[in-house]
Amino acid sequence: MTSLTTFRALQCWGDSLTAGYGAAPGDGWIARLSRRFPAIAFYNHGVCGRLFSDILCDAWTVVHYPAEGEALFLMGGTNDILCGIRFDVLCRKAEEEIRALAAHIPVVLGVPLLTTRASIAAGWQASWQHEENNAELRQYGGFLRALATDLSLPLIDFQRLFPSGDRFYADGVHPNGDGYALMADTAASVLAPHFKEAP
Image 1 (tube, rainbow, N blue to C red):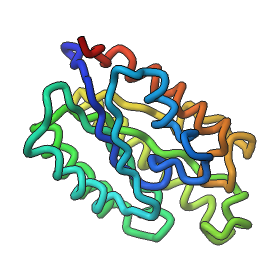
Image 2 (image 1 turned 90 degrees about the vertical axis):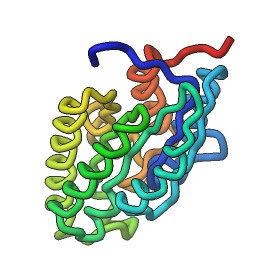
Image 3 (image 1 turned 45 degrees about the vertical axis):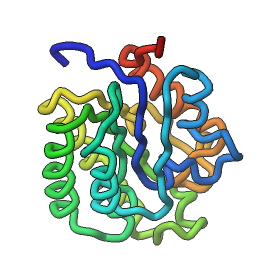
């Protein structure tokens, strides 16, 4: 970024990874961030099962009348890939909408996690889909990194910084408590320089 944009409020839009699915109340990564940065207003609009096109559409509801110091966090795409939506369709729609949103309000992008084979037993995907879906999630991560660089957007790369294996997963798709704590640490390292304490 050419200059550091400061935020006083973060509107967080996403799917179950943003909602904090599987975590105890108050243990999702956004709830943890809100305790770490009490002067910053966090709004969690994560909805389980949401496709990224729906997430991006919903995010427009705060763009027309943004408050001073307000920014958007956007993360999605896992459900699209697990549901078999064409990769080029996902990326084309994501780029179109993210570029449009970023022209109106500061945007922070998130790169979603990979899955583990435990997701097969949990019923999130078939065994033959696992490697193919993870390959697309990796490719999607590369797409989001390139887009964030092109638009000079802050990027929270959960995918690269999340350890492989099942230690931090509850079901091969969603983190457990330790996983959400790690997500909060990862997000804090990116967001802290942008947070402007309210007077």
